[in-house]
Amino acid sequence: MNDIYIAGIGMTPFGRLLDRTVYDMVGEAVGLALKDAGCGTADIGSAFYGTLTNGQFQGQTAIPGPIAMRRLGIEGVPVFTVENACAAGSSAFNLATLALRAGSCDIALAVGAEKMNIPDKAKMFSAFDGGWDVSTVEQNKATLLAIGEGVVAPPGTMSERPYSVFMDVYAALCRHHMKTYGTTQRQIAAVAAKNHQHSVHNPLAQFQQAFSIEQVLASPPIAYPLTTLMCSPISDGAAAVVVCNADGLKRLNGSAGRAVRVLASVVQTGSTRRVDEPHKIAAHLAAKKAYEQAGVAPGDVDVAEVHDASAMGEILNAESLMLVPFGEGGPAAERGDFTVGGRMPINPSGGLESKGHPIGATGLGQIHELVTQLRGEAGKRQVDGARIAIQENGGGLYGIEEAVVAVNIFGRQ
Image (cartoon, rainbow, N blue to C red; front, side, top):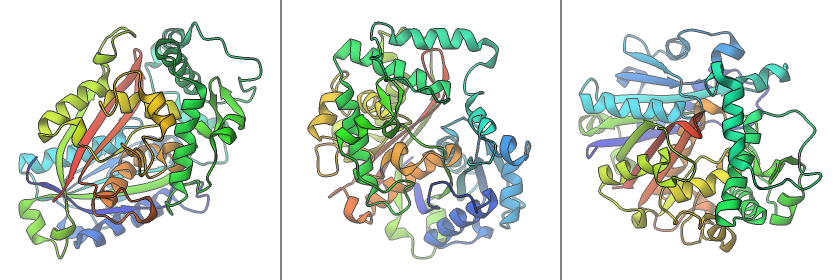
């Protein structure tokens, strides 16, 4: 990975963008990334387009990637559509790096986009129905919800409004962590409060309002211990990244000094394990591979963006990435360790629960933030002296964890 670089990044605001089409957002994100890299569409040797809902919501059930790229004038080159649930964008990025390493091109493009806010609310929530084995739905539910047994939800802490069943799954994971390590609801709320405070300084975030821990705890319940402000919203948005090798970087105008080095890129599926085997968690195993590939250690990391579809995700993934030991994520969050200015800043963008979660664009949005941090261009949310950054992005469910996980490590030149 020593000669793979990110030369350009682009991202739309994430949010409830009712007046924008998916192609409009893709065009903006790609245009920004190309401009940032100092290249044109003719320079792109291969493109990878991550999405989940283009078929379900816009009716483009086949070839959404080639259609989206052709509209921008990217044609006559390999274009691939990538679907890996919430890890689709990161998977597209990984494939772009592999194309460069294979020598099939010198400059590649990874794009992710989603238009999820649609008038039909029932259909909107159906986007998540395929995020596990659809032939064993009841078995999936039973297996995952059993993880949370042993912690009783207090009266009034379960929403009567419809929401995705995956919120119940996230709640079960919370309860297991609470039962196993003594994690508290307040510690989980500390993550959400911190991320909402970070998002105030991110002009591209869906939510830009600060909330205290008490306000997070007092927000409407979803599924104990999760409240509304601890969970990611339904989002629209797009993000794009221009990736190149050393030869490609030489061809780009003026981007060499701002290019960020890709030190590691790992995508892997989960594997069969027991709930009491955290050292077999997919994200943990992927992180170990990434650290080895990058030649760095967890203690070298200055800033991280991790998948936090609920605030609990940040605690779980901070532990899996070895940024804190297993079981110590909750206390670290409550101490402020994960805050910008703290010992290990995590999700300075605001995370998924504040920045937004347009599924196919989510992973590339995380990369956008980390490149911005490593360039020293993040303004009031800047992590001082950031040189090494790590990203984690998970998608779908299989067994008792994510079906697929991506971990990327980046370094400032």
